[in-house]
Structures are given as structure tokens and as C-alpha cells.
Length: 168
Image (tube, rainbow, N blue to C red; front, side, top):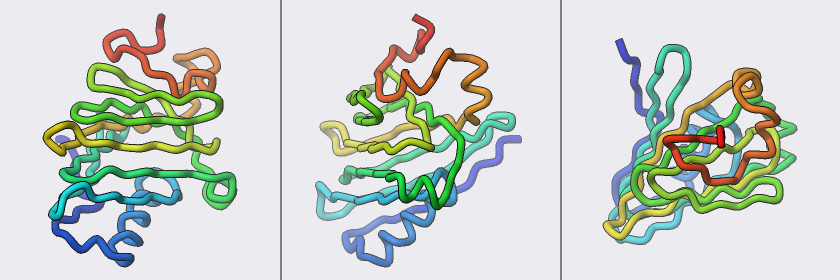
């Protein structure tokens, strides 16, 4: 069966430093250590990070209402927690902005983009007009991605149509 669990969930108005620390710790456990800032765009908001397994490939899900997030990973964080993975981002509602290396892309539903965990990066999630955001992240070990794509690092921070991917 499908193993799914919630890594972090918050509903309310008072997203204080304790909640921020819990949210960042959950991102550290599920993905990599980073600094994530949450910006409310509504008085009451909701955020949930959950995870499912597709075979042995983990798929993260980020759902929020009334907020945007900015996650930054620096060389300092990379040195303290090296994890050799790619995240394949698939926004379903709202958008994801990925900045890595010399590239930056706003990724809309119907498109996808990669980011790599062992180089500095910035990922922003933004809500749609209804204040909702939903995105999936396929968490792919770097050695698997390198088998499928030539020099995958050069493809980070570029938006591709999700039905064709980077095969163009």
C-alpha cells in the first residue's frame, strides 16, 4: 500500500518563532537543512508538508492557503548536511520560483523544474488568485537522475513542460 504521513501542519494566525523552528526542522528531516521564511498573505492561514512513497521514490507535497514561503540553502548549510538529491518540482496550484546557479524560473502548473541539494539554492512557493498553493516534489537520488539526464546540474532553475520534461 501507499505509505503517507504528515511531516508538518499548521492552521491559524500566530505563526511564531517556535512554529518557524518546527517547520524548518521538518524541512531538514524531509529534504535538507535550510532557512525557510513564511510570509502570510491572509489573517488565517494553513500550511502542510506531507510525504508519500511511490515504490522507493519519496514524493513530497506542499499545500498552503494564505501564505508564501522562501527556502534558502547556503554553502554553510550544504557543508553541515550534505544530501545528494534532486527535487523535481511540479506545481499544481500557484507557482514555484527556483533560483540556482545562473538560472531562475517561475514554474507554473503544467511545467516542472529541478533543483539540486548540494549547491546553493532559493525556492519560493506562491499562492494562486484564490490564495492556494499545491506542489509536489519528487525526491530523486542524484545517481538516478545522472543516469537519465546528461549533466542534470545545468538544467536546474529552468522551467520545462511537464509532459515532455527535459528530453527536448
